[in-house]
Length: 217
Image (cartoon, rainbow, N blue to C red):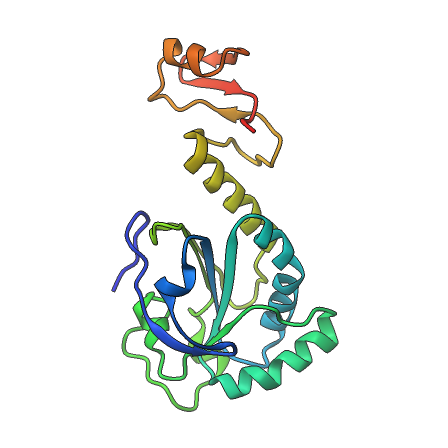
């Protein structure tokens, strides 16, 4: 199936390093980030998983759960996490899904639908390097797909999450390279009269369609 922004994230039941989960139930009332990897014991993914472990307190502060996926079984994940902690300095502190039958990978359109399980190499699974940001309403808010050779920028994932959460709470847009604390954009759907009521402190108009205002708290 094809995943589209704004649609409900597919639900699934899977084995993880923290036990069996049903995805929608696991999300609960939080945001969630599902990120996938081609195979265990691969170099780029080792660095990513360790970095995400280091960022977990920041995601916790944002009411966001994180969960990884690899097409290898949970038993392999449990061996891999020792290498991750040794080389990256952070122990994996979030669940990792075992997806040896490729059920979740195919459900989320991460891999060719004709791909089969069993013995596979990382190259066989080149498309399984996706990131899905999912809201408490279970809707897909954003997606990122990377090639195998380029490590993902999870600081950017955090920035994107901040933008999505700000939009969900205040219905504002964020400009290029925005980061927390920067001015935001008033959507064109909001008239000047309504903007004056909503932002009595004032806003800056560069063009009728481009209006900046201080980021809401």
